[in-house]
Length: 277
Image 1 (cartoon, rainbow, N blue to C red):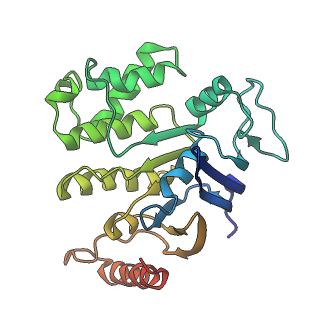
Image 2: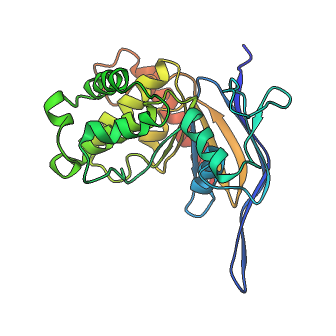
Image 3: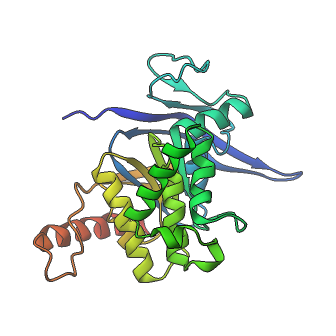
């Protein structure tokens, strides 16, 4: 069955320059992201993974090329062309407005405001879009409860929470506005193994509910959560691998889909070895 495109990059290039050197990080890259997919971007250090994520999300501008979203027009002057809203030429203000309405982001470092409670960290992002503070507070509390941040912990400042709790709050902050696409840049890179599993479980659950996700990672265990793997090398897509639906941990003896999970793991590992990872 043909999937709907939610995001498209065409001839995307990104160059960083100083007085003597130009570094071409992305090179005429083309990519379609499909609605409901959990797309994982992998590649060696310096391959352009995070640069691609920032360009796709509107957090940074490409040097050349276009980024287009196939989303509903929010009636704020963002007119469609060929069924898509092209964000590449937006002003800074218009780009910020678009991100607020259509894109969420989870960073490796949680970047929570230390002077605000966990609940307020989530709500301050939501208030930019939803002016109904009472309804927003209820949604924020519901989402925090889903990631096992109870009401008492939601009143705590970030420094009073564990690293895993902080990152779970950051995930909720990323989805509070119901973005069409959630971007995650090494979201478990600063976590221990148990907290890593907890955050990945949350992302998998969101994806199962229809949330489109694009995640950069350097670990196989995180990449296995995706159904589609994109491999970058020197600023271009070398190849991709379709894994299909996540089947759980292949090491878990109680997993009823253990054989399927093991087959997915082998397919991903073989693909990465072929890519020279």
